[in-house]
Image 1 (cartoon, rainbow, N blue to C red):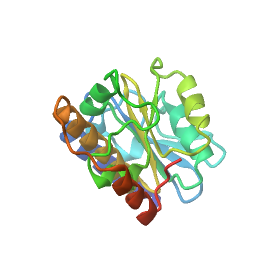
Image 2 (cartoon, rainbow, N blue to C red; image 1 turned 180 degrees about the horizontal axis):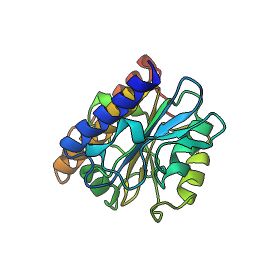
Image 3 (cartoon, rainbow, N blue to C red; image 1 turned 90 degrees about the vertical axis):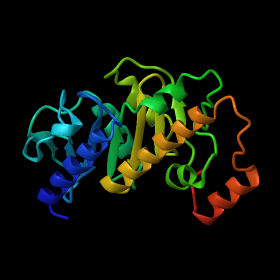
Length: 214
């Protein structure tokens, strides 16, 4: 994929998520690796619904801003994933409603944020780590991700939103949508005696699809 095509894909997928209410206003940020080892990043204060391919922040392979507008203030989150996960080709952060709501529940599992309601979140995300609340833009968020030593492809920032790394921008977007869908199911099922997947079923999925589950 050329850089021009990647720029267009980032903006297309971001607009799709915005149009479906997965992140509103000027919330959320997205980044992707370029072929030369650099990054394309959504600029600060921009809306997913109106990203301009030509104005995406462009970093070179040394991490220097070389073009476009100023990047999102959540760059420490993005660079933490790239630095600790060699397979990361893209990172997406949303302020999606149901996942944020689930992060507020007193019984949300910090080590395994999403309950095992369907196979798909397990297959696409593995275990999602619930991190504590940080002030927006706080570099400590990136340090918290680094503290996971690359063992998680997805984290949930309490009272804030999910962050997911994927092998490419399409995979990262698909995975974060699965995270939001599963959180929505969890909220819908809250208070009911819902039949979740059994531990044996979860382990079968982990083994069959080679899921990271440490």
